[in-house]
Length: 317
Image 1 (cartoon, rainbow, N blue to C red):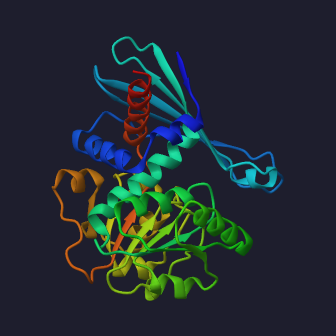
Image 2 (image 1 turned 90 degrees about the vertical axis):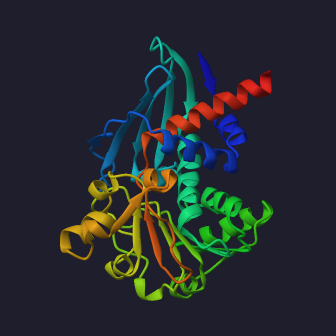
């Protein structure tokens, strides 16, 4: 059985190829039961609840895998990431384990690539200013993957911790991106063509009143009904898309507006399956405000894991 490190995952999953692998998988589809959520009590006094996630996916006779993810929000107190993951790829004919991949690296790569895939349909083709809200592990990957599919010339970084925002901007500049930290979130949103949020916020950060015509809003961070990254005004202004139907059950940015009547189900314009298959339209004009909410899907991990192994085999061959 092969063991694939985080370094190998990052090295082999270049963003243009990964975006196309996800596009192909969303077009083809696969079997993916609802993810298993298991709550685990925190060991930190007064700490946030922890979560164990199990995410299987398969194409009969062609591919089979499962991701195991832990989300421990209090890990920041231990100087550790909040999210860890392991991906087990299995032989689709026998069920025998064939590879274990670093699931943490796989997750940040495929999550960022899914956002870029959505933006390929929903963001203006001439988008040049990208705002990242949040400074966690996903933030630099969102910067890189959006820059791979849009002509981004300026990357703005906002975080509650200004020192972390400045440090991330420094790292991105060293990687060749024109990045700078910003302190005024409202002003930064008003400047941005694409706004990506990757936070664990429970109170909305993005006010719909700040959005200028033509903005694309990309909500990545919230994964429970209690989490919100954009307020009702943003939902009301935008043409709303989701990655999969799970977002309408799991994501506070969709669940709460649906429950309160701010968002009608008929106003959810489509998901990544429909966008990739051409069943639903993407952006309709340059002034439209679009909003994409993702919670992740097991098929993304399966597609990414398969691409890693193909790339490694090509390199060895």
